[in-house]
Image (cartoon, rainbow, N blue to C red; front, side):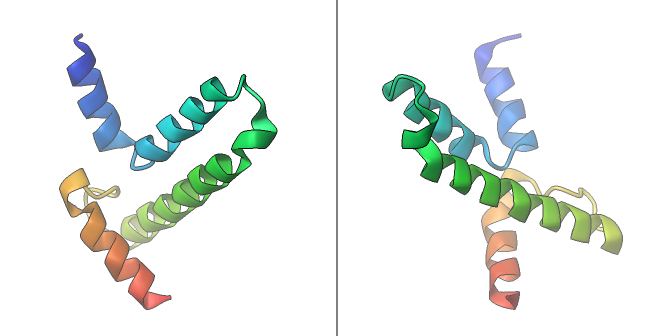
Length: 84
């Protein structure tokens, strides 16, 4: 399997891939000192929490796919954030 295919699959299945990569990059650049990367971890956790709620909500409403495809995520994000 090529790296491109794996990356595309990750983009589809992980809406927080960017935040995850930023956390790993921070760790690498700071000698794996977790304290220096706390804001990246908090951002990643907030992302996972948000998309977890979206997925649960869509599942409860019977909307498929439960996790919106990458091209629809920005629109879904705007809709959910405007409700709060």
